[in-house]
Image (cartoon, rainbow, N blue to C red; front, side):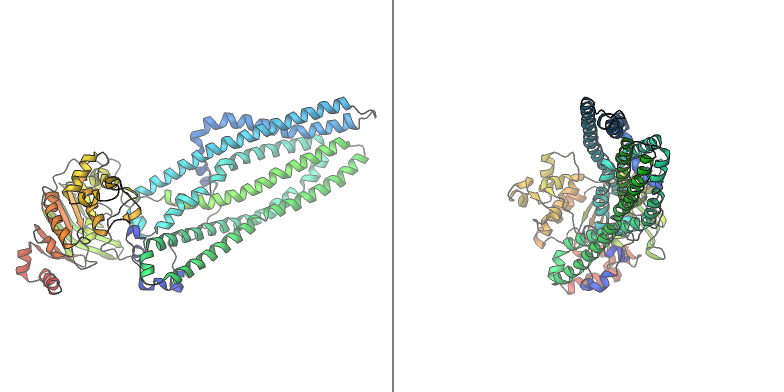
Length: 626
């Protein structure tokens, strides 16, 4: 329902939310200047608090994680650190001992022990990786489920200013980019930190002077890499933004393909997509190039460290301070030192990617519904259907009222028709009744209850809506009708379809009620989709029924049948009917004529015709052109 919303953002929403495609859609220059609200780079420092918030998703699995990880990490680290000692011992005591008598037997024992340690290390690491892949996927599942659950609760205001593709990319791409962090990244960081600590202790134990000489290159490496961090983080944020824009455009292009082809704008659309695709590629190339700079920095630093090690180590050997075995152990440990440093550098890049995605995910998670429930909201009891709009002022945008001073009441069982030109506020009244938005001033009451004081579920479960552009979900026709009441039996579904004259066309389909329909029901005609929406509303059995141009897509013959079905559908229910085809509302109890958010006149058809006002003019104009 979009009546009365003047915002340009709402006009550019995807077809799923009421797409409006302007004549300038083919102008790629104009479109390239269009930027969605959430497509700005988030200029914040690396937020460790937010990273901890992300890692909280590992907390439910700590009982499974901790015992296994501690054992596997300790085994892997000890075996990795013990092997250089074994090789050093083999050189000094089995290959080139001080007494000059090599021991082949000792060498075999050491070699067998080293082989055993390698096997233990491989087994521990393999089990840890497989285990973390399973746990990591569970964490990703939880995060994606939480995000989807949250965006389901967000109000229409949220979707008015964001295209569907922008929301889609959060649930898919941004969550997917966190997989490496959860599957291996976080645990590998702990393993690498343990190894680094162990290596530093061993190096200092072997020889303090040589250890200090080798470690002098570490500050150089950190100084250079620190300069890259901010650039890399913003580069990956930019990548996410470009991907979000591509997804938004794809969603719009697919939903609007009929309009694109009708106006022969395929080439303009392809040119615009090619431009966006090219921009995305360049953004990715920049981020990837910056990301790859960590490797060379560490390799150069490692090479400098190796040069210092062998030059100073040779001097210490000649001075009889250390043995050849100790130097070899040093070389092994230093090699093992730069390996986790390199992985930590890559992990930091991965964390930057994760940070860019997590900022975008938590931006949505922190979004609060503009229409929310009070802490102690009550359950709305089964209603009779008395509805009252009391001195309503409503603004989609501050300073631009869509409704002004609206006071309107309907008694239980009455039918209220809302008529007026496009933008007069008809659908806005419906939006407020369903509490998709809250009034800026005034209140809406049902049976005397202010609808802001009741739970949304208890309110909306008693209101049925039939829209002009009814939405058909992927699945069977039976499931689409049952969407009105999920616990309905097959018999109840078919009875509802028969009541609105949908049964005949359904049983003539290939699989009858079990016919599969794709998204938006493309295999069905507009009239058939509308009949399914009628059956859906009838099955829900609401106390208040809203018909928003519900018969606009139905041929005249079918409409006559629908008028008979509506008598059954509307009986005993309070109904609000929006219709431009004024012949369908002649029998309504009250016809409300709106103009620019103000009630101009109201009454029965006969009363309004006698007044010879706006309604009379609308009826006369319709009959003139019929």
